[in-house]
Figure (tube, helix red, strand yellow):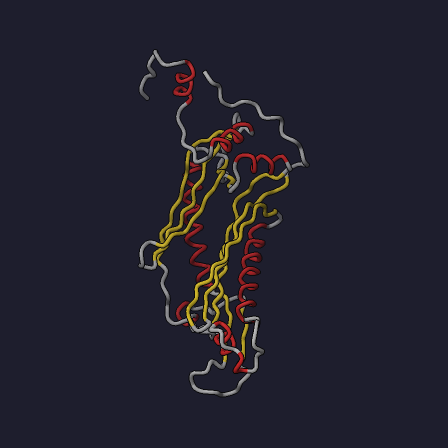
Length: 299
């Protein structure tokens, strides 16, 4: 390391002597972490790029299982046409089913990026990672997805050096993290999952999504698209169940749920629900933190 010039102000000399670090925290979050005794070590990140392939044509009868060696697991619900035989083109059946292979592929990509971020933090000697941000982006039109997980690695001030354990992780930072610790909940890790449900529409769903329903015995006016409604309820329930399985005996705080729908035509659709939050564990009763003190000195 190069020698520090002698003509620098005392505060600048002290900062150079302490070493440099990088941080993705805002100024208020940075100050709140210092108040809690968390010193930033560095900005850490992990990436995973995956090509998503479609092995064969998916159908309500799980033909996909022929290509993967396993049938669809989990949620499945059938729908039957009430009209009898109309024509060869008439949709006499339909099904909602969970796309387990999509969930497994998403988990592989997310976990790969997450583990690489944790490895960076571990190598830096961090106790935890705060202010996590994760994202998924498509790269061009090649069916390629990039998973990205980033955060600020921190070390407990004057705390013992990490002894082989994994750093804890949290989406929280600053005052939100401080309030969680004040309430007696310590961060353990983030929890994130995706649920995917395919709607293979039958005749009624197709007619209702296209706006034509009166000719098949339905009243003119509003009518519930029951198959689509059931799929939306199911995809959210699956995401909740999957996150609950990750928690063990811990709690989920700061949950965020995002659901998207991709229309495939004629009532067919694909639903995706991403649920993420903070896995926390109670370690004490409510204990207010000491009042904040200045962390920046003006010279």
